[in-house]
Length: 176
Image 1 (cartoon, rainbow, N blue to C red):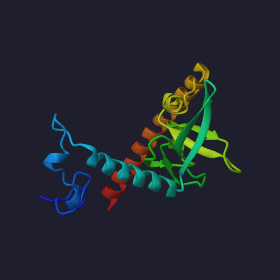
Image 2 (tube, rainbow, N blue to C red):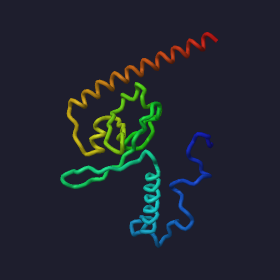
Image 3 (cartoon, rainbow, N blue to C red):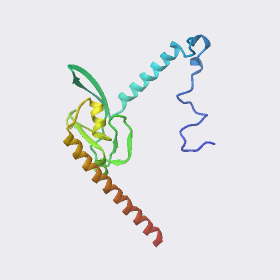
Image 4 (cartoon, one colour):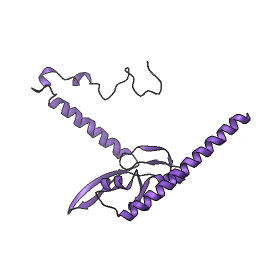
């Protein structure tokens, strides 16, 4: 059975389908049964397409940091400063549903602004530890504790707002 909101359809192409000229043949197999070099070229092609797609993304950016005297490139996704813009995870690039810039629930995420262009880029992370892993850095315990306290208050505030909203919806339904 196929549902409209189901992203998989057997009728549509997907990442597991081979083009007719890409179907692995017996001679393409290694002794252990794995697919040989013809598939690595396909993988390289897909990676190149993925890299090109990131370059077109207006929220995608790169920077470099020095670690042990070596320049290390870091890729990230930044969020617009416009109030009401959907927040984007800096590491994954995934838009956080229900989290908007300027709303109180943005405080549940760890926010960093890094210098870039005139205003800098605003980055959002699930936690300070996610930022540390992404930028190969270490934050002070004080910063982490301060964020944790702020995030707890923001979550409690968000839960209270949701309960208030649901109560108002129930009251509206009962009045009708």
